[in-house]
Image (cartoon, rainbow, N blue to C red; front, top):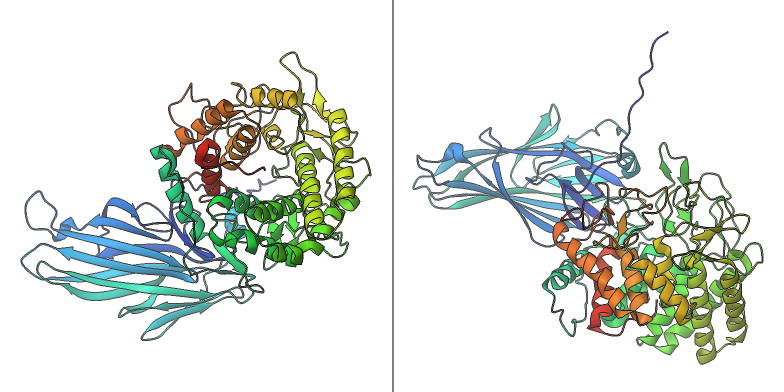
Length: 638
């Protein structure tokens, strides 16, 4: 009998790598600009990798890297030295600067050699590229991709095509030839005495089945007034708004409706929940409400109209995720259709964004045009979201290959009892009831003001409130608290989690109840000193590097901060905000999707969650909510 060796598949780490992006394109490399040493490396457009390797030599030698200089989200310079070309002496005489710029359909690469020598230098610049055709989902799963595509070379370009994409590489004077590891570009050039010379290439790609497209026009952000006095917050805001500009997308079908992609590298597409939260966070700086408008309209256009079990579509439901083809996650048993509706919270959040945008000046006529979608969304909460008629919203995956958890904590182990046992569904999440309560009341207000009858929805919200308070509270010697969820038997799942923070500011709690939640959120078990833990350290399932079971998510902490500020707990809001601001310098003010929940009392800087996406739309947009909650302006009710 022989042993069978199986391939170990690991999701790529991201935290040490360098990225430039202009959605839907992105390029990942090491700090020197080379690609190939890490699994994430490469140039991508949408959901396909176009190049998996890139290396540079000058006269047969790789430059010695000395600096990586970010020039915004879409551009970076890699600085190196060519000391083999120097004259004698300690000072370097010849340097190389590689400028990489991402655009909506690929990248531009420019390599500039500069010399202070009194003589001209003859140089041969070589770039080796590895053309690729690996699907993004396979990269994420750590799977090996397909064989390299066939490359066709002409005097001015190199091209290759796959089922997913076609690629053109403009050579800009290089000669190109096949190499053992792909494609080799060669420029024979002269660096003048005390001068410089530049070579480079341009990569353009097209994905025929793309459902999203990039936005080239500049973003419109309103000025922050007042500017933050805390330099950490100012730097976080500047970096965040730059990243958010690069994350803007439209759908191919609705090119005028701009929204925010969820984040890099895996989520360059429309996500109902993520795009809605990011748009809500950004309302104070969303000049002309362009992001809010686009997000509302594109999601309304995709709103469910019929009941389809395979896609989780239901009438009035707001979708979860849009892809060009079925998304299969190898090894996870998950297969999601191109338009997937498996989310329990996006519908209520759509209503909340519509109301928030209206209170900030979205014209009545534009809101009236969306009233049919509003009424359908309200009806979904009552008729489908509350699947068993108990007055609360629940979810369950009916397909067997969809998301088992359908709130924002959508990993398989995110809803568990304090002893670590997983809760069984259908699940009624605590924060979803708060979203629904807020949505019903805000929807009622819009209907009353703009041509409808809001009374039935206020009554529905009142019944939800009564059922909520009868079901979710758990007695505890340290003070009563809210369960994360009710399980299939309507038992309150007793783990203390950050989900509590989402209930604040929605109107669902009275002042005494809100005070109990506020005290829990800033307790040492929940507040790490670098933000709010997703799960209390008192739970058996707690682990600081668990995706949803002890890590810190920036947007999650920001929601709690906003709710605390709205309900008058300014000291508690400031305490959690200080945690995020203490963490921000460790991530060069580009807050990742999540980081470790280790205590700031034990370590001086936050530990990365190495597979965390960055930049992430709601992590970046959270900077605006923190600014609002700390006095930038009155925080909108979330």
